Length: 478
Image (tube, rainbow, N blue to C red):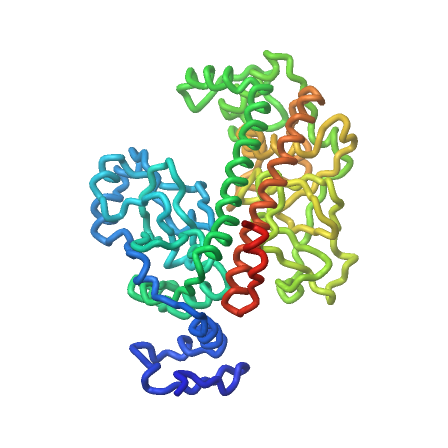
């Protein structure tokens, strides 16, 4: 007798026998879409529970309250990852917290070891990645670790957890309190499809190659940054900065610009301009190197969709580091009057001008528009200033310093088009700009290839569960 019988998908209506009903009696647990995915996993030739292959553990409540104190976090040196750091098959090291090494060493149970699978289980839950080599890491709030106890390809398992069927399993097991949470016992009971070791390795290799590509991309963008900072005499700036002990600075009448608010005369910004002048580095205002500065508009929410349409609607979270993030794209539907939108041509530089200042990307696709928190810059002459050089500068510390200094502050920081036009851009040699452009082009290429490999790996797992996996790919790979 079947555990579940799906009567209707829309609306969801499922008959279930007494054996299937365990301690969960809420209807969300028995949605038709979840049951369909569960049944497909159960039909796989070999399935085991997570607990058969992994030890699952998290940071305990007393560990967090006793050791993750404000004082400890101030003096921390070892990264403790939280749910916002765990991304799909990778770790985001922005906005990290750190704990002292002594605490990391003493809390053995919540240490992270290489090849542990990290899974966010509450808040921003359902994302999994594999812990890298050669870095000390610790569990922070809202993530758990799966440590293998039997031979299995952990990159294959993390990909399963990130694919449609893993996400469906985790979503089904969540419980609702203040925020969605999957507790440890339910994670241990999730079913894993276990294919042959050859298939596991084939899928895992794609994820490992994606990791390699991301590391190469990090190296390239770091090299581009080092060239930029060398040109802007960062070492001189940092040396002089040590001597700034006060939060104020005396200026002569000649040095006072059109702005009289103290925000505009921060010591760090004054020092930066002084270093440029001392080294004869010329600058041009943005308004003098661009044809146009324009911001977009936000259509009403009923005109915005996740379904792919012709016109992409870019928000600040789509502005990556010198490249657009396309994973969470929204679109303007066909009912909206296209004449009201400002379509941005390829090659324009986008920069965030409200709230989160300084994110900058170059447009590399057709039919894009933005909201009012993003300004689009169209260069007059790309043989004078290169788009990716300008984008890198705006993303840099000195670019942010310039944007932050010139912004006005109400509830949130904001820069209007006129103020943005006043920002000065250092004019470095065009040949050096070309070297920066070439490194960023390679950086983008490797990031895009790594994302493609992750998507292919997820699709492979889904094909495997659905019985559509092409075994000839294994032979070709071998």
